[in-house]
Structures are given as C-alpha cells and as structure tokens.
Image (cartoon, rainbow, N blue to C red):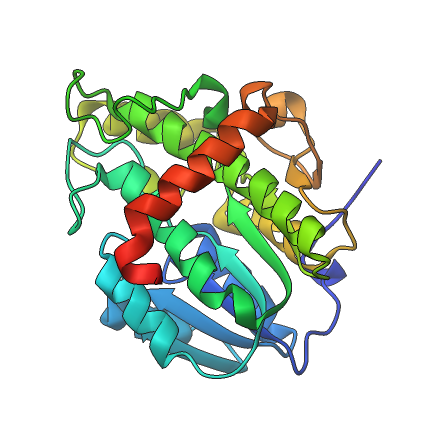
Length: 289
C-alpha cells in the first residue's frame, strides 16, 4: 500500500515554489511544508494582510506577493514583478459555489479564477519554470461539462455547482493539453494535477445555501487541511510522468494517503482540451501578449 506524508517530502533547498492561494487551506498547508524543507516559497495571495499572517506561521524563506486571479491585470503585474526562475508553480487557489459573480474582465467567477486566471499565470511564468506545473482540480470535475456556447453563464440559468464542476474539468483538460505541448516542444518541464479529496477548508465557505450545506457535511467527514495538501505535495515533488493526477487513495477518493488516481472520460478528451486551450488563449490574450 502506498504511503506518503509530509515527512516524505525531500529537502527543497535552493528551489523556488510559487503557490497561489497560500494564505489558507491546503495551499497554506502545502506552502508551510515546502518552506520547512528549505524551499523559497512565494505566497501568491489576493489579500496581503492574510498572506502575511500565513507567512508568520511558517519557517524558512517565505515571501508574500499580491495576486488576484480574478483580474488579469493583477496576474500580469504579478508575473512582471516576480524575479528569478521558478522550479514549481502550484496553481492551487480557487473559489467554490459562490452566487453568480463576474471577474474584473467579465468572466464567471469560478471559470475566470479557477481556470482562466491560472491559465494566464502559467502562460506568463512558463518560460521561467524549470521543473513542473501542478494544478489543483477536484473530484467534482466528473460532473462538469465544457459549454463552449456559454462558458461564462451569460445565457443559461446559473448553477453554482455546475459552474464549479466546469472549472475543475477545465483544470484537468488544461493539464493534459499543457503536457502535450511541453512534450511536443521537447521541454523537460512536466504538468501534473491533484485533488485534495474532501478537505475542510475556507474554499467552501460562502453565503450561498449550497455552500452552507457542503460546509456542514464537510465538517463531519472531511480530512484536515494538512491531509488535503498531501496530494498537491505528492504531485509537486514525487518522480511522476507528465499528466499524472494525484488524490487520496481511500474509499471513494475522499480521504487517505495520496496516490495516482483516475479521471473522467471527459477529462481525457484531447479534442476538447485543444479547443479549450485555444479559447482560453483568446480570452486571456490582453494579459498574456
């Protein structure tokens, strides 16, 4: 049986990790482990005050920089201001089942933050990435559909969970297509993905009725942030093939030590992955060109 814990993360001295959404939840837990192992860790956060509070709980070389993934201008500014190479980019930040909200650029908040913000960030940082890009998805991707006719929920009735599932499916399609492009170009960089299982984090806290119900259920059965961060760490530091997907190995994938896990057939659709990439390039072009 595969086991993996924070103590299995090898020394990371001399390496730089950028972790989005590292002020709370599994991002904070993963960043704390990496910093404790000697890495330089950049906490890429929307709220600098909360980022500084998180950094104060960590040992090692930790710095806080502002990044609002719901604003492509902020994504561009973060990338322009970041100095030096990045060994591992961890696309962790996300929002889950809020009321209908638009990003600064007019995108539906979950698709705009969870997918497009990270797509743009990866595009801007990729020339400096030396080892891998890790993107955090969810078992919720299995319920997702990529609706190219209405990606941003401008015509159909808004369903928060449907929008969330679409964004998490997009994360896996992005990982697959990124790996295909990296392989084609002969790059040594790899793309991997992870999901935390059911982790009791701030992600699910909002004022929507659905979010409150999920939060109550999570409080009963979810694992800790530290346990939920293990698949991300596994995907970030283990020797893995490109396009690997890590998640908890326990019953129904909700808990347990991380291992490589499966994904839905929709997440393996190469034609949809390529089309989503092209559309994402068009939508984020003002920031990435």
